[in-house]
Amino acid sequence: MQKLIIIGGGVMGLSIARQLSNAPYNISIIDRTTPRMNASYAAGGMLGAQNEFFEATPLYRLAMQSRALMPHVAQQLQRDTGIDIEFQCHGLIKIATEVTHIENIKKQFSFLKQDDHHIQWFHPKDLHRLFPHLNPKTTAAFKIQDDGQIHANLYTQALTKAVISQKNTQLYSHTEVTHIEKHRDGYTVHTSQGAMMADLLVIAAGAWSGKLLSDIHISLPTRPVKGDVKLVETQSPILKTTLFNANGCYIVPKRHNRYLIGATSEWDNWSTDNDASNLKWLDDKSQEMLPQLRNHRIIKTWTGIRPITHQEVPIMGPINPSLFVATGHYRNGILLSPIVGQLMAKAIQGDVQALDTLQPFTPNVQQN
Image (cartoon, rainbow, N blue to C red):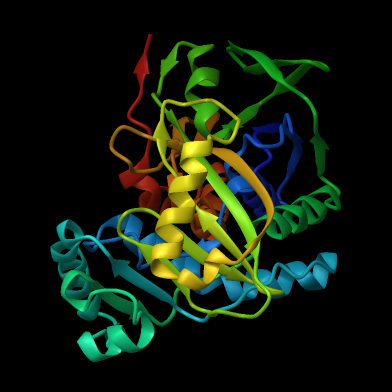
């Protein structure tokens, strides 16, 4: 039985391993499990398949497929692990509260309306009813009915519990990868717990993926984007629909009158500490949309490091027949994880159709 190592125990690495539960591999997942750093920890849990896109790209099509998979994934995980990942679908309102963003909002609506006749544009009367404090002349918004959300932390916990129950899988948590060596017949992964051998290697280590690949003289630039996030609680419910502002601030309603507010984006910042000015920006922009949030109790604040590529398109697929990578999903890691898990697992097993689907995202690497 071939030995397969997955470096990275976030939602990508876990989803790939889950789809390989019945495959003929001895799977090891190596994860350093560092709080406040991995993207899965910081995620808002939005399933914004339409929210982020302005044209019918291959990534858009994957996002739509993956969103459709998530209700079934949620049911499966609850059945297998007993963990409710809190899937819900109350839609998402995309809003612009700055004049400079209104034209983009209109273009996005025109694109999405071509395939989704349920999408709803808010006319001035609608805007005034929903956001009476905002000036309808400098505001634009539409509602995507089918963009939902899950609880990202519970999702990660459920995937972890499911994967460690697999007979062919072992998770090495709190384990740091220090160096990778390539041999003619495989790889040696040196870790803080000792060396491990692999016939096949999957790099799903988020913003750290590029650094790991540089050990074996492969240049695949990935960049960190630090995000500050906060969770607040109000005395009474305000809304159920997610709000996503074109300026990057979003409000994701959770259970028990809690609201997840995110997220700042600082490129090339590896810091894990919350920044006071970033948290103030979150307060200012979220309360501009929902003044009711001014009276809130802070549950917690945190940060996460999200991976991005120079082209802002994920990198997924084979580098060579024994080396695979899945990274650069930026704000769409939670959303894309079901479909990426399926496609990567099939690609690892040589499935031609999966390899063809991943072709637009296949790594274009340079050998140093």
